[in-house]
Length: 253
Image 1 (cartoon, rainbow, N blue to C red):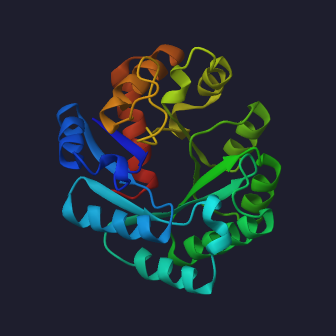
Image 2: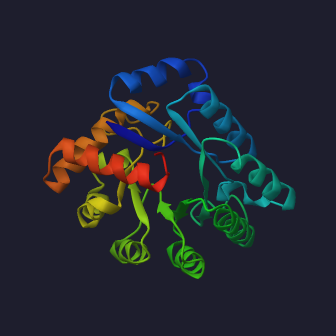
């Protein structure tokens, strides 16, 4: 059994065949999906998917790309959605200083307010961090104690060790399979199994051999294969440990 801890099945890329995508993954042994909110609209869609499909759970949040739109009304809408059944985390939220589609101060304020909401509701946080490691750590450390996962990890050894030192989980995507991704594979090797989770970030980041095509949750098996190879342990051990981590982090029972 595997769990895709970060996918976007509500996105338009899946409109033509969403049901088939879910069935393919279930048939491949992916038993649960955490569908991630990125805007108010996608958060609502994520909640709706979770109500329709027993194997899907939702998060609600506002991505740093959309932080310029975050205000008190946004926070209240997220709070209302987060109180619904099968909402298991706040996010994705964080900082993105690579694309800077929203102002840095607005990203920071949206991040802070979503962390506060997570702590208020006793929910974990799904963290997006791209080229903003120092500021992300400063904000997260100030919020401790906090349950968090750094999704689609792209940082260096120092950032990894700081995150692990805070007790955070680290989630890797299919980009670790890319030919030029040895740096990421090194981070996988340094991440303890009891702090590691797997995600596709579908429809993005298809594995090597499928780049340029839509990613799907069933391809998390290729990611687990690669982690197994890097760690030098069996596929079954990777599947079992990462599944247990996800169940505990998202309180899936």
